[in-house]
View 1 (cartoon, rainbow over the protein chains, first blue to last red):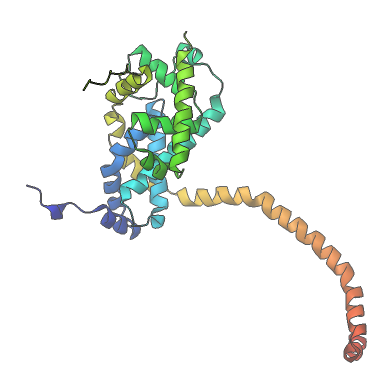
View 2: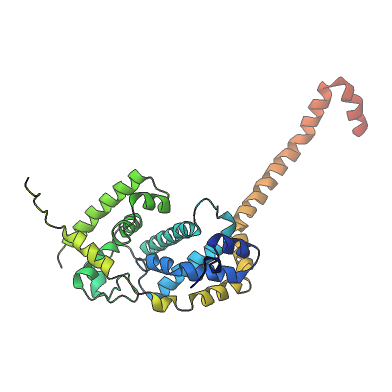
Length: 185
Length: 102
């Protein structure tokens, strides 16, 4: 039986990292990587992009660890960074390849968001391709709300937007997604 | 009391549910992630390269500052002599000092 003492709290690992113990940060990364990968995999198109996003998240967390206030769990703070990085990534991708139709994306061998995902369902592929056409804000909010099943309050906390703003964006995102999905090939 | 009539499920919601079920498997990508991450964090020149990048980006700003200072200094220098003459002339106590200085 594992005693409670054997598990070092996140806050202590944060302290140890700030005192220069890199292993403590490696332990933090090990603990929370699944959550970070889970969210990031909804946005990344391939394993390389997924790795990039996740590394950026933890690198930022490492260098900004002093800004972490202990008023909320470390995981919440890390999830905010993850959300910001995913949003930055979506904006960057938008700048690089906006204006491509769903069908064109599917025909060009577009990989749905899931890097190692057995997405063989054609409707799902169409959903992911349509989601890729949403604006970064719409994509972020619809992913967190519908795929990650986060509450409006949680999304508000993660994004820094007001709850009303999240509601409006989610509503618009659904409408836009519905329109994109209704366009039959 | 009658049971409420079940609403037909929104096809979009059905797709979302399907997408939730088929969660991406990231286990392969997660393998040895800490090792790669720590290697990146320990890589020499990480912080230096960041500062170097910031410094290079600040060059136009500093160049603009130097230009503004040069223009400002040239204008001030030309006005200073007249301004000092006027100021000392208005203050009788400083007239002698002004003469001594010149």
